[in-house]
Image (cartoon, rainbow, N blue to C red; front, side, top):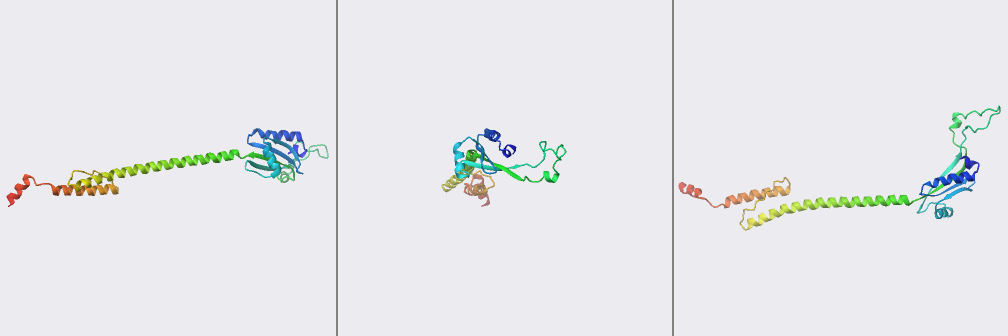
Amino acid sequence: ELPLAVKDKAELSRLAGDFLWNRDTLFVAVYDNTGKLMALAARDSAAWGWYTQEHRAGDDLLLGEATVFLSTAADEFSPLDAHGGAAAPASPAKAGAAPTRAVGRVVLGNSTVPIRQAQQRQILITAVMTVLAAGIVCGIMLWAVTRWTRRLGLLVRASEGISRGDLSHAVPDTRPDEIGRLCQAFEAMRLAVQQTARPPNLVDVLELTRID
């Protein structure tokens, strides 16, 4: 605040130039309290030209502005009192009071490229995660459908065998889901039909003859 208060252009220019260490800072402009430009450090003349014409942010320009106030707190540079000694320190109430006079303002122009790059990276990450999630879901669904299709295929082949009189196609599915229960019911029916359709053996014939 002191260089701005005393309008030291050389020191203000040095301080403004120090802000350009950040490669995303396009320009730094220092104005006094009358609006006069006191110092300028510009990395991008196009961005500075845009600001001087439009006085607003643009698609590639992000603005930050701060008012500089002159501090009223006493320090080691305070003037001497009437007896030649150091002036008394400010009272707590005065020391905590708000600054009383604005000596100027600082305008900082930053590039929006890092923000756009961060947004693009976030969009890319979101897209990749979405594709991965969709791939995992599709893989799980394909695996489940394949298993269901295979189990139903066994049931269809067993049904076709029964329709041809072939009762040898077992359906060994004991899973506790709907398809499993259907297969178990079908297997019970197949065994019952097989038992009923089994031709009588010699022991059965002899038993029947003895009864007669």
